[in-house]
Image (cartoon, rainbow, N blue to C red; front, side):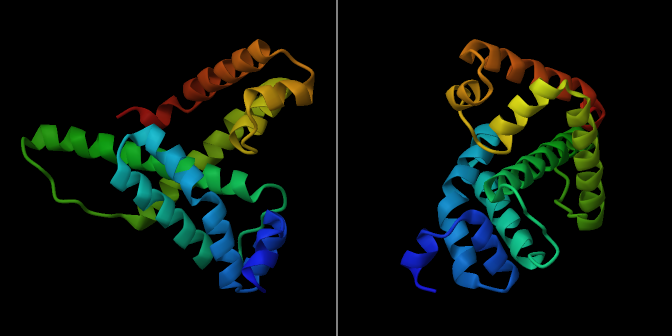
Length: 188
């Protein structure tokens, strides 16, 4: 397929092509979302190198697991969620590393534990989904529209017939409840 045809193809159609090993389709998704995903990671980490690494890791993982990954609603939402989980794992690793560095009084060499990270990521995702289900229906939908679908406060307000302030309040409350529910992952 030519690049002009790919530009006019929906994300979901592109993902189906990716699942059939289409590197050009994957390149189009990369071009559409790498900058947004980088900004998402950067504004949580304030570390350009780490943000770039996280986005690259997400894209590499998605390409490697393309046959197993079923995306039926929002490709962008899937990518954003993957980046958020990678950021959370990165922050958790940084906290643990800092803690042990302080205890040891020196720098600890960086060691990767991909199996442990995968299990921790899976546990975090399960806990996140559980806490998301606990939110009141309207609050959950507002949060999903914001975080997974990338809608602005104005768009969410219009979609649900709410004031923008109500949407902001719902998002703030949802974040507070999720932080409380996921607190175990950030202690230590």
